[in-house]
Image 1 (tube, rainbow, N blue to C red):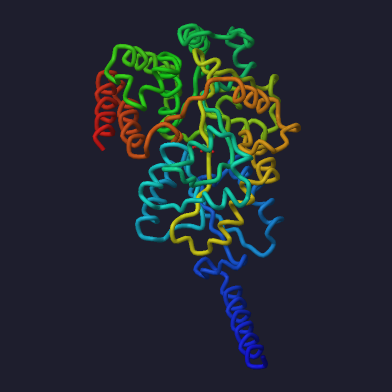
Image 2: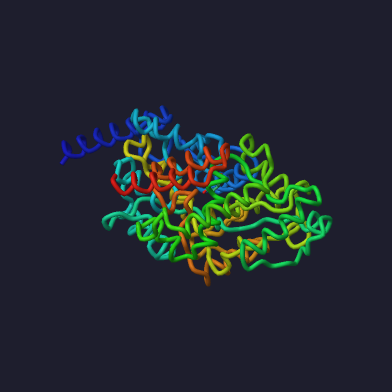
Length: 427
Ligand code: GAL
């Protein structure tokens, strides 16, 4: 009995000592799993309103986990245009962050197939997360029956942001609605003649974003979906007609587009230099943080021809294979999933909560329109934000769009897009 107690006491002492030393070394290589130390959170929410969104989430995380240290691993560049490359090389050299941002859908599948991330199916079971997220969102986080990430938000991509003062000044009715791109183009022409930028856009990825909404407007949701499962032919006359509309829209945009990122393009609308910007609803946060009033200083409407469709994307957070402090990552994922975390984050980010238990009663007016649309409209997957196509396919499409920005050759763009689809089908 005495011997047993002695062994027991010695084991307890060893366990305590190792816990203490793990807690002391803390840092990202502690491998602790003890609920102390650091978690490096890798995102592209490095600046401006996006950072404010992240900060709101971090605040809840720190309140919920006073023993853990948040380390900001953000890499600037909208839509992860820089971050995704940095992440890929870190994953390749077995230097994963504590957790990283990944889009629900095809982009997440890439990380799953490459075995970069751990399944979280047991964690979902244990924490009751299967009950707090919409079923069709959960589907986009799965592969072979396992679920792989925790969604933080839902964004809508097919939104036009408008400045009523610019519209009035250029002789366009600020309350006009447009049922097609053609109707909209007629007003863009008026705005151009009046000397304002009709439509602001920025660098490559924002042009891909614009293109996806044009494809959706012209093809309709069924044929748009078919682009991603091979049932819509990229060389069809319908796609070519959409590319011609895209060319027309691009002709109304600011000349310096290649040197801007999305906050600059949205800012042109805020500053009354441009009438419209097509952007995901992270733009809401840019207007809101500058004290602009929805309905007065700015208005929104679905990209003409896409009314009744919610062009969807969701950010989610992962447990990387080889994460150095899985307990700290788990704590981050818990905050991300929690109603409290989702309320704080989404309110600031312009998105809507993925967690159906989050209270949205004090969300902004724009966000209420997105909540209604998500509830009632047809949902399709965003191309520019990882929901519809793999990272490598998106990279090829982006290259074709970038080339088009310089040469404006529709036949060349069509060729590039067809080749990208064929390459993807073979892989
Ligand atoms: C998207 C991301 C959004 C927002 C946007 C602009 O890909 O899902 O949360 O950050 O990029 O950077």
